[in-house]
Image: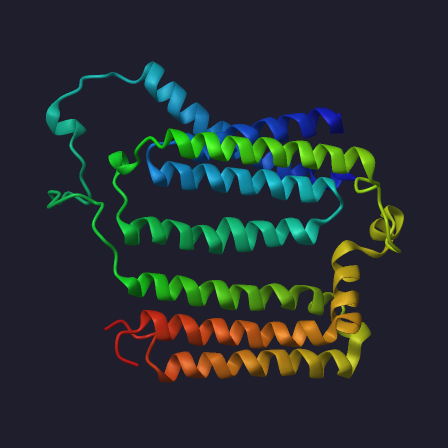
Length: 118
Length: 167
C-alpha cells in the first residue's frame, strides 16, 4: 500500500541528501581563508544599509491572509473534481453556490482596493 | 518495515517539535514547525488518508506558515528578546504531563484507537479516501459545506477591514 509513495520518499531522500552533501563536502574540502570582507553579508553586489529585521508592512499580512482564504477554497475543489461526473448537475449547482459566495468576497476585496499596492 | 519507518518519522517529529520551543531565533522555530507539519503529513499518508496529507502540506506547511513568518516579521521579535519564564515552563510541564496521562488512560480504556463507524480500511482502500470525503461532504454535509463559504466570506471582509487603513 505504502509502496505507491516510494517515489516521494526517494525524492525527499535525494533532496535532503543533496543539501547535506553540499554542506558537508564544501566545509570539508573547500578552502577556508576567512576575512572580514568575505563574511560580510551582500546582496547583488550592494552594500547592506541596515539590518534585515525591519518591521514589515501590514500589506504583506493582508495579502497572506487573503491567500489562505482562497487557498482553503481551492482545497474544497479537489474532492469535488474527483466526484464531478458522479454528482452531475447537483454537484455543479452546489459548487456554483459555494464559488459565487466567495466571488462576492473577491469582488469586495477588489473594489475596496485591498489588492492594490499603495 | 512500516514500524521502523513510523519510528524514524516520529523521532524527527519529536526532535523538530522540541526545537520549535527551544530555538532562540523565532524564524528557526518556524522552520522546525514546518518540519513537524511534514511529519504529521507522513502520518496521514500512513493512515491511508492522502487527501489529509495534501491539505496538511498545502494549508498548514504552506499558507499558515506564511502567516506565522509574517507575524514574526510584523512584530519584529529580536533574537534575544525571549526571556526565561521558569514558572511558566513549570506550569506548562504540569499541564502537558496531565494531558499525556489523560490521553494514555483514554486510549487504553476506550476503543478510541480502533476503527469505528461505517468506513472500514478496506473500503477506503477500494473506493479511495478523497472520493469518500467528497461524497460525504457534498451529500450528507451539504449545508455545513455551503456555510463554510459564508465563514470564509466573513473572514475575507474581516481581514480587509482590520488591515486596510482607509476603506
